[in-house]
Image (cartoon, rainbow, N blue to C red; front, side):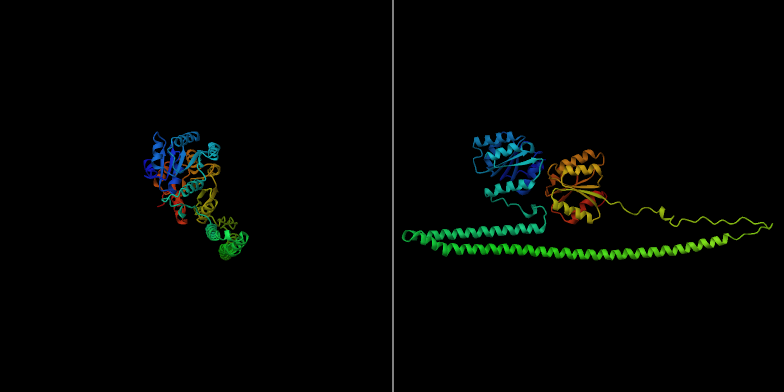
Length: 449
């Protein structure tokens, strides 16, 4: 825990998180620490006012045991003028107290609130902190990088980027129009005293406003056309690729069917050949056994009985079964796109895959089936990954199902913490197919290197 505290103790924090218990805010603190380097988690103590006054952070988060305690502390800091600088106050609360937090924000005491127990909607916490820091123009804040985003469909990601470009171009064009209009109004102010105001306004509208609006309309049309053309091109390429892949799959299926048909025909011919030989052998034995041998007393001797026929496939029954049982994996992830990606990767690798979108759904599946491995997102609604893992270990006896954590956090101190809770491995988001399969193979085959 000392190492974790050092990671969350910047010398000049731009964001501070005041709390009563480090264990309670571990998940929220990890999210903020990933996003903001100048961050410190500070335990509530008698000198907390002096600490806040010293650092004057633009973002202060309150996560005391109850919302009432957080409200009392913040009100005291304001009353004693220890937070007189420009800042955003954010209230972290338990789900059962969200109505009180909502009221405190609507009334204007706090700027925003976030439910951190149970911890879900982690991206909402990121955007709350992000907007607060941007509002206060913190120079050291680098913003949210691409590495911190979850994996989504490339087409959707590009559409978002194109929309941002279009909005930026529109904002820039509008600002240029405002600047030009201000210049025109300034230049025309003298004319208003000497000429008819109506004529001056008509002149401004004809010679300045109309050309600017026409130019703005053209720029918007070009931006929209570019965005639509790019998306159409992407869609066409995706369709062509899908058709091509489907054609190749059909060709492979046809070839496979031909191979199976040929093998079946060969097997049938072989059985017919072997059957003909066996029939000839039986007939020969019957003919031989039907001959009567005379004894010395000219009395008929016993007729030779045919030997019992041996079973044709008697040898095959004693061979061991060479089919290896497939391993079953449960994927628990609330992000639909990332969950489907994991299911496809594992399915292509010949694993039997089940899926759930939260911890409660996972526990229901675990009651009905024994899995070889569970891949678990740590931050989910209803029941997060860590509490789900605790329940699995508690009910699994001496041999609980091994759990691999899905996380975007790369901090080794948290890995050690989670390992003590029963986590057996980690898949860091975003992850490649090879990294996913490597972790799963280690988990389902403990002796694998």
